[in-house]
Image 1 (cartoon, rainbow, N blue to C red):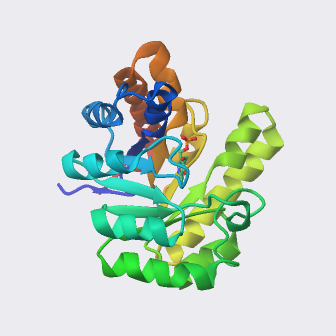
Image 2: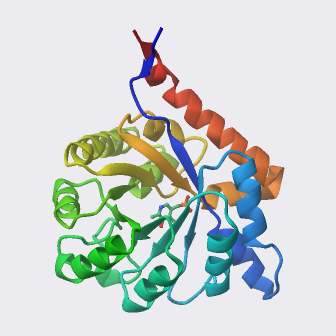
Length: 259
Ligand code: PXP
């Protein structure tokens, strides 16, 4: 008998930036983000995400080169939309590039990339990345304007910013949580309808992951800070294993097969 899943499986991208933050606190080589990346993959990560910031506060150029050369799973390279970062992306050709705001002018009031105001500036950069065979993701707020602009710009993916939802959850604000989940679910639906692949992330924890994992259009979550923080207490593999299990459990009812 043939069973067809109703929704796609949910991938986990583990962001290893803050392993580098700890390394850089002493300037040496330990802890090594590449070692964390290998461990994350063993523990159930489907891909690795790293953000090369303009000030190199965590991930370094060498880290990106090593990740690209040695990883057995896709590398999602987070970068600002600058000529310097474009050149680095074109040199390494990661599986995907996620364009994120770094400066105040590049971000919307809530924190996503200003794809509407920045469309003229973003268009050629997106075209160059796509021409190199790199999948392009835009880190945006789950707002109609941003979603439509992302589709128009030819992005392959939008990563919906879950930061406001997670802040509301931290403050236990029931109305705010409900409002943000509804906004993200509607955004995911619209983005998918516009032909975009939908990812989500920022600030996700064991407590907040479920509601996002239940949005059927979302096919990938990118999670970093909380996992690296939890790793201090119980190790990286158990932290990732638990997050993976929570994601899978949240997805379960939707994964029921149809005949
Ligand atoms: N997605 C994007 C685009 C990000 O920039 C970040 C943070 O670097 C994340 C996801 C992960 O957020 P967090 O580290 O809070 O889990």
